[in-house]
Length: 246
Length: 248
Image 1: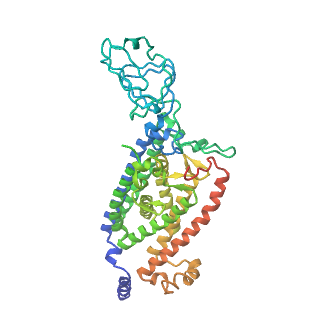
Image 2 (image 1 turned 90 degrees about the vertical axis):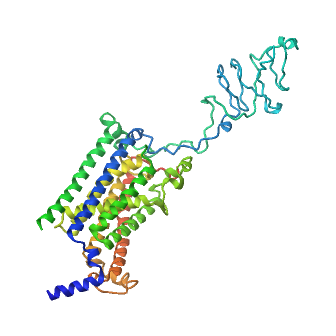
């Protein structure tokens, strides 16, 4: 007993026994907190799988780069050509450099500016004018009824020459073709030798995710989560059983 | 709601607070602190080397337009090249596995306990890794053999790292044992300076014991690298996915 006391005294000088050797009740409570937290972590991971199941189905997702910075629209659309036969919706504003090919129908209210070197004034038909007047450079004309009828005989821009227009800010045209790819988004050249950058065979996560009716990934994680939960619960059960036995 | 890096980070930080409270009661105040410090430093060393060697990276959310949506590269706190959340997750997984293994195989020796600890941690990472690569919490770049888009070395590495860490912790902090093969090395290195005491490990003060533990962890790190190098070389040869440059 005396030896034990000396040993404990020596041990005490090295560390605080109450802090470092907590009693069994404290240990058991702490273990319960740890295990409940670990189970919450497992549940959190399972929820994350449910959210990311669709992502996992895409075989390119894992190797995908983050989306490139969205370029500002005026820079992207400048100088492009619209496909022939494009119908412009009401109120469309055309940016600088847009070329209108033959067959393009321009509804009323579409501001069609002149080319950059020609002053850049808006060219909407004047509602007050009695005739359809299109000007390519001069100031807008407000023609009153009966004035300058000679202009009426001039062809109205059915097949206008290519119009280059100044920047007007917003555009609502869906631009599909001819859009420049932003810098940095070029796809890597595939390797001529070796496995390539896409995972081959069973290594591909999308195969797992699309398996079992599109729930393969969820089932995989679910099974492992159950295994983890059982292991962790068994540890807690054993610890409790030991305390009771003592 | 998306499983993006901010959700992941917030959840791990919250769970960590509860976990630390519980582990402190179970292991003891200073023992738990040493477990946290050791686990953080050990995993930080491994993951920093992995990032520098182009094996993996944590920068997906820091690229292109995402940098404006996810300031600080998506992760809130970085320790060099590695986000803190990854290290805390490693601590939580390792500590849970360690405590579970201690309860499950209480009468076995340190090596069996460490193996069980590593096996439980491996099951954890079998769940975590596919979710992480799907949501780009981290990205694997290495040319290697992949299983569900996670390199085999990630799982082998987890097993070996947890095994070594658990054994070092158990032998040093809990059992205060001397390892015969390392006694001469320890006497000539860490026990000469800064500990300046050639007593047996069980007779060292707590602060000295912490020094020995950190020294043994660094030895474990060297062992880990030595074990992983041939595995990486072998899996490189039978790769089913090529190298992806870390910065694309």
